[in-house]
Image (cartoon, rainbow, N blue to C red; front, side):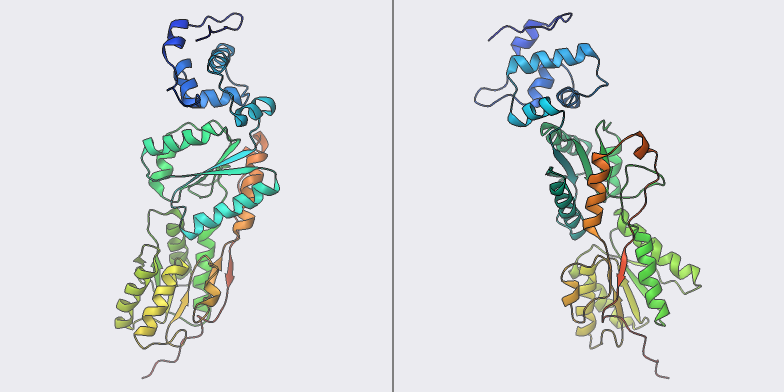
Length: 359
């Protein structure tokens, strides 16, 4: 093994450097560099990306190990030359749900327009270890910035425990005035859906909610409850669901037995689909007997029978804002209060005024 050439003013422990080598048969990775240099993976990434906050002794030590291991994959060579990999990383939990998957598509489209690639890592679990491993995978690709799509509170709490020292944004709102948040105003969307039903003349309205650990589900439920309260309407306790059409169907069967309502606001379109199926199986009509509103405006919503009234999110605009914030993050942008993206109520045929009740 070649002897390490230490930069001027730096002493390298040659015994330590020479005693640890990457396994034979594969090129060195960022983990090998970090282990040999005695630093974190994040520190190696900062060195490669020319981060200005590093101490010179740390930078020189890492560069000496990089040279020793000949750690020069193409993406790193590009990063060393330009301080940018032109890759945006995405940490995504529940990426196969419609909302997260549509958000990723919006980010990919905006990134492509800006000349960037997107590297997505699925968060299979919410443990600190799983999140740390996913973050390290992103750092291996020397990402210029990170998008976090983690709708569950426990996952975001675990991410909070990590010190992210690269530009990042979160596609959720947990607190006021966090400049890292870019989000849709789910509370306003839920209020619009509920207001639509009230203005049609409905008074007995159920809410089929999503899992309450999901930040968006809680915001939609709070919007529903606030709209009813502000209008002095009777409040029926929400039904907690799981986003699936199967749950919507089973909930609809139970509700059809009660017949104590004329409208349902579903927290997503999939549960609304199952709900409509159940109402029809019970011999009732939508919207004649029951009006139904969903949320998301999935591509199939316009083809439900009847076509679904729902709340539409502009995921393309969400992606543009996300990529724009990442690529232009500065002290000024971090001092600005984030402006939520307003959703839009799309009225179709699944809602109508309630029929007069027979006496």
